[in-house]
Image 1 (cartoon, rainbow, N blue to C red):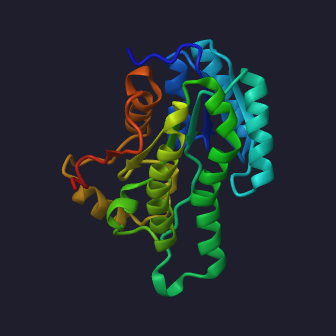
Image 2 (image 1 turned 90 degrees about the vertical axis):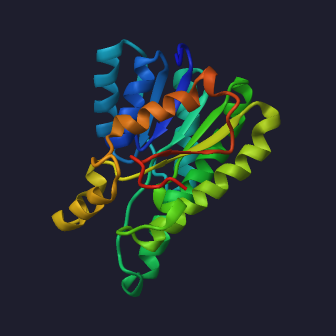
Image 3 (image 1 turned 120 degrees about the horizontal axis):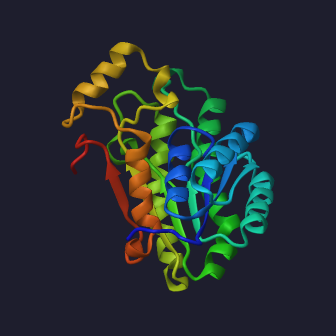
Length: 250
């Protein structure tokens, strides 16, 4: 159950944090994994540690998710290394918390370019490989912020993640006839380096809002990815999986 034996998976932004947890969990379930990250040395380090632990082929490949040419080069390299692409996890992203009145155009553009535009072009450049696999799975990383706004995150982040939810639905419709599913995960507040920009007071306020009364872990998100990537998740497409300790119930 929920095995990924002989599947070939890409995880963008997989050098650390949630991405590294997803890569490790996929490898544990038997998948080959290519970690695509701007920090290629860290990606290779993470890949080597995963390979040593689980004995599966794991690769670290350089990619700048804000650059379309870099995305295409990395997708081609991952396909060549693994012999195919069955699963694409679009995890790479950044968080901003700038107040509305202080937002500058270049910051807005950077967040949208990395989070939303990057996700789209990763899908585009992997499309032919995913369709050829006859198994394709796309998992996009959205956010609770895209569902309900946010208490601390900036509007560029909120807008990018809401866009990913819409993009997920659109891609799911377009790719369904080719047996490629496309879903997204909407994490709540996950304890990673990304949220270190918040003050201790902001962190405590966020934790207090969570019904389960703890922050999520990177592996909480990774376990959701396993289902969406598996045979058992093959009839689910165009959906958002909420992993947030109950902070968003609908």
